Image (cartoon, rainbow over all chains, first blue to last red):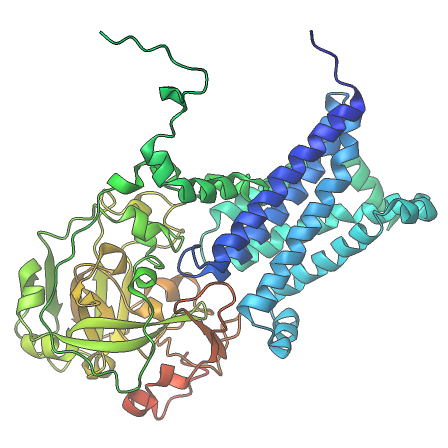
Length: 203
Length: 335
């Protein structure tokens, strides 16, 4: 006999699945990288893995609300914060990898690169904005912010655009993957055409 | 006749982990990593996934031992382990990711091979596969190799001076530059057939040197590394090594060397002239527009926590031998 899943059970199962899918690859990644089992240059690999991972998670987060609306699965919105926080965590590791393992804490070089290289500047701006979203995702903060919370979190559309350009700008010549990501970003934003148009008109 | 009734705790045949899966459990783990959220979508651009189960049986290109005079390594450079030299390659003909050439080049056929040296010279010649290793006395050269992407290696190459080869063809007075060309064979080089795999650069890959750079004793035609003939991912059967220039100048799997009178248009320079100059001399004071060239990460052994960032030296440390070639030149203009 099968019991029908309650909404809270569905959410719980989804959350467990998200934790597994997002956290285990990280353990695996750093374990192999630490043991020098991740190709000749583990530094490049961890930077790319966490960078593209953050972008993937960001896009998945932005897929939730169109899907929830389309298929009338409102409970899906309850996993959005977790996905967003994983996107933030991957982005944080991406930058930490760059600073700690690539530049090896050459702080002046780090600052220099952020200022001088447009694609890194964009990436850093996106990360700072993402940090603001992560910090304000705490329930008590959210409650205190009231209506301005939603306003702030609309910044996620800007973030995903910045990240798409950051990726496109970072490669040497292999443009196919970045163009594909730009396309995906465009599609996800197109679902929100009306909302974004309204947002722009308020500026 | 013995009739065995299986007990409930017996391991069923279907439950035994197949040997190839067992042997490749690390590969599987790695694969899972890449299928996780970390790369749900990046999967589309990661190749050779189907190979996981066949790794052990995979065809491997056969290299052979070479006879050569060894390099005493006076500067006591720490070599990059062979396993890393042959698995971390920028050779877009076999995929634009560093690990792809080692995976996709193993069935590359270098026999027969023809290397033609022609153009502005009195005695054009064509070398076949065996000439490459027999025509000249081979010597080992331990060189630093600095990639334009700001990582570096130390590689024990085996080969002969390009100058010796050029002297054989007797360049004439119009020979001002040397133009090199990689094999064009999309059937063998999947990156040439597939834009996504090949990173969107123009093929065949071409590179060039000024004649005095080509004649400099440091400029090496390499036919091997670590005492053996080159594996395909490193540019079998013959490649250029110009140790004071960024790695992309050191063109691989060469089929043509042409003496010409004009400065040739080279592959990366054509694609992004602001980012990759014709000279491409290693220069810590001239940044790539998108990253600093002041320092580099030396790839040796050791994992993530290896402290390997070092200062980049002008001309990659070979200034004593080559700086005079650029005496009257503004190196920020001719980068």
